[in-house]
Structure formats: structure tokens, C-alpha cells
Image 1 (tube, rainbow, N blue to C red):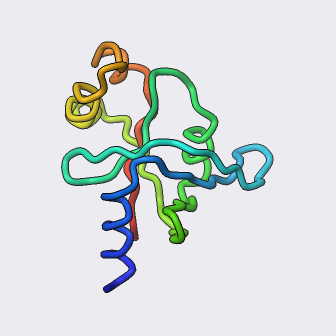
Image 2 (cartoon, rainbow, N blue to C red):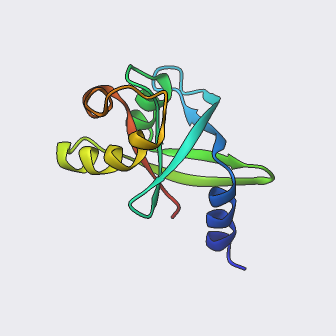
Length: 118
């Protein structure tokens, strides 16, 4: 099995993930727990509307580590700012979250990063 297949299988099984980003100001590693989502056949990181340090770090340093059980992957984050793409992706993610609030608030105010596996 290739690392890519192993990574995809781990991502399929594991919704809660940890990521280590590089601090945009400190340049030090920052590890947090977050959720990954699947939409449009790809994997995403996002969160409820509001600013996030991890997102600011990915904007400054797109490469980060994705921690999946015993698998640590070097990946790249692709921030999504295009309104049409944001609407399509959030249109798949938000309706499945009973606590999410309005789709519009996510499109307007949530970070959205595609996890690129390499």
C-alpha cells in the first residue's frame, strides 16, 4: 500500500485530527486538535465562523503536519477564498452539522483549507 492510500484510508476513518502549523509570528510549531471534513471528494479543515490562529498560520506557512493516529504526514494547505468554491464546499459540509447555524455565516466567516496530500 502506498503512503497516499494509507493516508486516505486514515483520513476516511478519523474525523478528529491534530495538526501542527508553524506560527506566523513566532515561527514555532503549534499543535492543535480539529476536525476534518469530506466534501467534493476532497478533505478540508474548517471551523465555525470566527478567526483562527491555525488558519493565519497556514496562510503564512502553507506546509503543515497532519497527525493521524500513528501516521504523521507533511501536507500543504490550500486556503479557499473564492466565494463560489466556498459556497459549494460549505454547501456539503454545513447541512450535515446540526449545531452549525446558517450556511451564509460559514461562507462569510469561517476558515476553509483544502488538505493537499502531496
